[in-house]
Image (cartoon, rainbow, N blue to C red; front, side, top):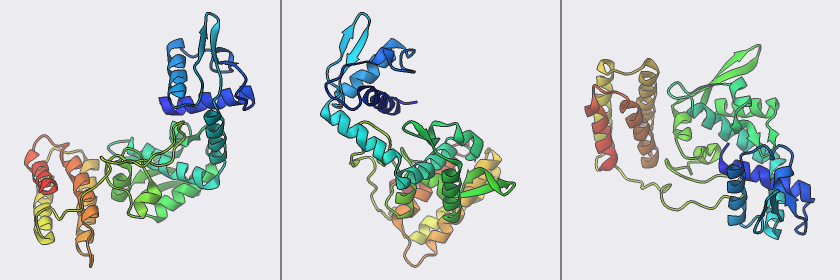
Length: 295
């Protein structure tokens, strides 16, 4: 569990113990499930909450640490609690969590539903997503061709990302609905999450320049096909070869559109380059795609 998530849970525990009062001192060492946490780690979480204005200066005493909520901390906790129970937030959490967890299963990107259930991606604040919420999200991802689904007894037992699913997942934070709306660039971006400092718009690394790579599309695709022809002789695992085939097919489909999207072509080229980079025998192929991305 990362610092943001753990801090949010600690904030919730402080809020519950103080009953939302800014006048109550809470001894964090005595909070259920928090007293056994390493002292340094607990102090880090408290200092983080102080840094973002959720708690006042802590009192570090020989017997423990006392904290008080700030008004901002009360407002933020109540917002987190409202969001935790909103159906759309829970649905987004399931969508984004499934894609993120499957992306982490590199290189096959195959995720078992049972493994997802016990992962941090299936949690929203202090609750766990229900099976119905997860199955509903899987059905949506399958309909949108972001995953393929394995079923047992009529119920999903595992999902595997498609090439489009990998493009959605190969970002700092997956945003499925944003990706499908064509609003999600490759790179770092922000989406809603259970954090104590909210989700501010990201400026900088997430911006993508729509460029035509210095070639007309026919030239781009000619080079892609030549690179693809090298794949049989490359030292690559079979799942990676399949990924490359899917990425090239997706590029072919995009190139045949009436109005191909430069941003989509760039994403597909980036995915192709990442797969090619796993070969140690044909760096020339990776270099060729890299050249397209830089021109």
